[in-house]
Length: 448
Image (tube, rainbow, N blue to C red; front, side, top):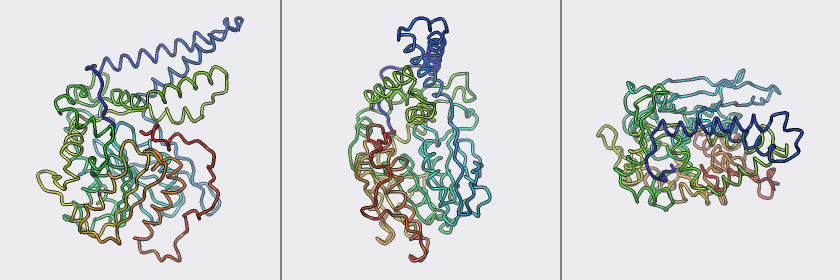
């Protein structure tokens, strides 16, 4: 969870005003630069003005729009394309349990709950992860809501509430569920499994896969952990927390605004983003840019940010990063201790990226040592060479190497006979179908 600071305090409505103004300036430049009369003058400044306007208008408009899932049809063994319907399975004020139902297909035996992070972006950030799992799994996702749209009357939502949501979702899906938690929720998914192990063993998930999460932030320092240790909670609250403006249903709710988070995300790799937008503007001016190019696909999602409740953000920083409550097995929910050592039956796998600059190698694999009651036969770990944060769950590294390993891990602990399991691992020496392709998502510099 990037928590890099911003200088000074900017009110919620002031940030929205700045965003709205830039969107208007982009629209104005686009319209003015495209005026037919300027076609008589071949000077390139008009094409650049129009191109800058198109890119600017689109970019600032995306910041307040929740992206659609847009899951493509899934090809079936019968030769048909099966439409995917996104259907709420459980509705809650702060987040829904969503089911991706594949039409006219018998439900898959592999039931997967994909726990999406609540760290500034919508669950749709995992669109490619969902798409890659659907041919082989029955997929459910935690779809967290934007705090700005949740009325104050719905109350608070902190990491204890988040953990209770996970417990309820897993219990609802049943004991044959395979949980995959990505980034921020990894420590809380571990806690949820421990709660079920102690309170409701029959509802425990079958497997738990933790991908690039800060289970023990102190195991490997990053810019994120360094900032968390450098500032006090009072400073953090003063710099980051704002009250939602009257434009939204959550007016008056205290939040860590999505626009403030976005400034932190971009500041972490400002030069990379500046070059990406400069190249996009020139491509627009030359007429070589397209609606579905890599830039638009990436930034339409990257720029779409959501507000987090203040209590969730602050409790995450204080209890997970500063006080290390999960890492030191001192986490409590409603005053009751959560003992990670109670996990004795749930198979646990960790996945890390060697170039992950958000949750560095060592932070996630620490979960295996914490599971003191779990036999080694139910533990597994994987370190993906050359992979950044995004790449280990949605980039090329996920598609080619990690996804097959995760599915094999699920099958192994489902009791499926080895001779009947589908073989998914690429054999050594097999050609890489993406060889030579540059995937910005795999790079640590583009980590989100």
